[in-house]
Structure formats: C-alpha cells, structure tokens
Amino acid sequence: MIFKTMQLDDSLANSCFNFNGTKYGRVNRCGIKYGDYKTYKPGVQSKCMECIIHYSDIMIRSNCSKDFECATLIFHSNTMFERVFRKYRDAIRDLLPTKLEILSAPTLGIIVNSYNITKITYEYINSTVNMDAPNASIYITFKKHSEGLAPLTVQYDWYLIKFRFLSINVQCQDGNSWANYQVSTATSNLGRLFPESECAEFTPTKPVGSYKYCYVD
Image 1 (cartoon, helix red, strand yellow):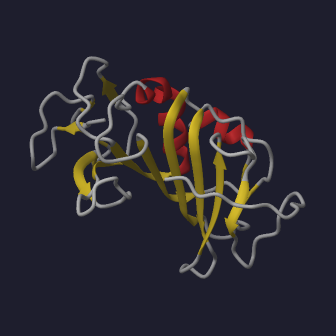
Image 2 (image 1 turned 120 degrees about the horizontal axis):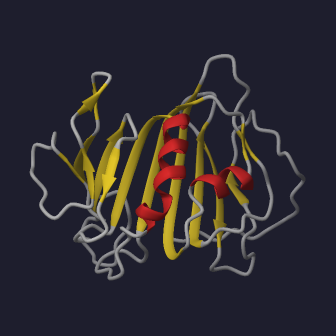
C-alpha cells in the first residue's frame, strides 16, 4: 500500500491515499519507515509507509500502485482512529497488496497515542478494523489513557475477524511494559483471543484456562 501527502519531503508518485492541505492548523503527514516487521529475506528490512493522521478529510484512490507491503497509521486519539476506520475501512482494505516479496502477509499497524475508552471488546474491533482481508495482519497499539481513567482492559471472547491475524497492544500503567493479546484464524484456536502478556494492574474480564499460544508474523 502506498500513501501520499502534499507535505512529504520526498514526493511519492501514483499514490493511493492523498491528504489535502491542513485543518485546524494540523497537517497529516506521511513518510517511509524501515525495519518494523520481520522479512523473508536475510538482511532486507521491511519498507513501510508511516502516516500521522490528525483529521479525516482524506481522498483514497482505487486505481493506484501498491509498492508497500506494510503501513503504519498513527492517530492522536481513539476518536480519530474510530472515525477514519468506520468511514474508510473498505477503501483501506482495497489498498492491501496482492503480491508480496519480503513479508509473509500484508501488514497494517495502527497506533493510538491517547484514548478515553476503558475496554476493548469484539464489538469494538468489529465496528472499526474488521475488514474482509483474509491474508492481512493488523497490529493495534494503545498508548496513553486519559488521566483519571481505569486501565484499558481487553475482553476475552471469540473475535470473528475476517483477516488473518490481530495483535492488540496496551501500554501498562508503569509506562514501560506492555500487555499483548492475539487472535488468529490460522491456528486450531480459530478466532479465540488469548493474552500473550498482561499488565500487573489488569484483571481479566473472563476466566481463561490453560492454552498454548501461537505467534504469527
């Protein structure tokens, strides 16, 4: 997938994702970032598009090149993340590349820098990122919650995702460690969310027995 903004230092031709000007004094920006994801080829770094999105006035073109196998979208708040994905989810899905050279799956990273929600449920995931993209992997990271809020918990449940793999990462209260939750459609525990790690302050919303965890690139 490839994105473009007029504010880029390096001009990217044949773009899929165009940002127009500024809004409220804020500028949506994109750039290239290397090395976020493990590749098939030794010594070859992943080349991802990284975009900082402050507002949702975005034009997405369907007839564009797909030079990038991964992208990271960074949002200031969960409100903007929710607004963009509820409006453009299908269009973003159509930007996923069909041919891969260095990654095992088209990969979309989402970073939410601040949030005012206290629980992630299947309904929340279904209303935002649950796009029909069977080969895609999606990583969502929630960083800092609004002051005075309880820690963000992730509900254990069946997550009937339409893509290959979902990773939910939540920063712990200490600011250094992370909780990680995963869902995969490529394992025997089809669609079941499991914790890979949890924060000390987190209390599970539903008891979970002993499971074998499986990491998917």
